[in-house]
Image (tube, rainbow, N blue to C red; front, side, top):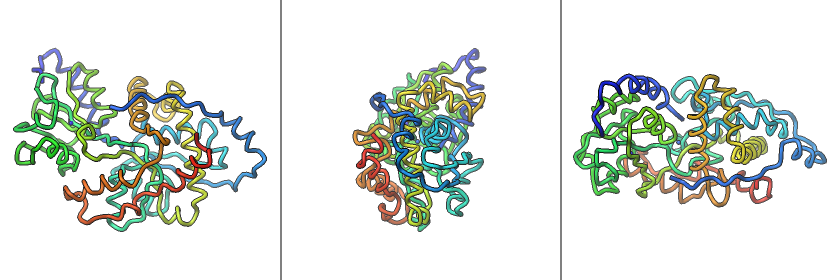
Amino acid sequence: MLRDLRSHALAPLAVLACALASLALVACGADEVTPVPVATSTAAASAASATPKPALAKVTFMAGFRPQANLPFVAAYVAKEKGFFTDENLEVDIRHASGADEHLKLLLEGSIQFTTGTAAQALRRSSDGLPVVAVALYGQRGDQGYVARADSGIKTPKDLKGRTIGFKSGVVPAELDGLLASGGLKREDVKLISVGFDVRAFIEKQVEVYPVFLSNEPYAIRKAGVEINVIDPADFAVPTLGLTTLVNSELLTKDPALVERYLRATLRATLWIQSHQDEAVQVVLKYAPGADAAQQRHLLDQDLATAKRADGIGRSSKEQWQGLADTLLKYAVLTKAPDVSKAYDNRLVDGLYARGEIK
């Protein structure tokens, strides 16, 4: 976080390779999410009719990747389609990033108001002195993991000794260093190969261990008939966190009420999604026509599971952020110790829960 391929399996696996090369560019084992009832948008609006609406605000949300069922993406889709944004008098233009870090660049420019990014991205930008802050944490654990063929004998970090391991991004990620350390290993104990985003490196056995996005790639590999073991660094005490809602800290300072309106709408949408997964997938398909509904449902279910926390979806603790920051610093992803309080701000989400506006 490996049975020989016979000729009759090559065709479907070639198709898989093409599909996963695209899937692997995604924008992050938990208990099943218990559905939470939530008032319909119309009923909630009626109950709040005595309170004057704020002035209409036009904002842009840019998802960090193409349309798909990552939870903070779906929350925005549902908030728009089911009227939660309307309840906040928000007119939201939903867009999707078309290139690497486009959404973060536009956020810094002030061209968009809301986007998504991993907690690690928030920490890196903040550490560099850039005004990027996470105002809600959806991924209570990270989405980066590893797979090996089921017959490889690779199930735990200790089993990685002497094995060939792929990594995607051109640099060895902190999660892999942490995973090796949890098994008493170092980089020198394994063979590391940069494989990019091409699953053929795994299919053709160029590597024994392949890096995956846990929310969708293991599903696709298994669907193609390849039995695998999945290794999630979070299962071995490696600090990881996933997707967040990001804003420019200047907007948060200047207009916190606007940010709160967006968060209220998307968190209400998230509660609706918990008890309407099938309908939520249909909303996703409106934004992602032609996508595989079963795969989108699987992705949504995985994201709902990793978002779950006892005190409410979207919340986080300083300990979580500090643990991740320490890991990134230890393995040189960060060059200096960040002030984690500048990378995230819980106050608005905590306030929504404290006042009972999100239940």
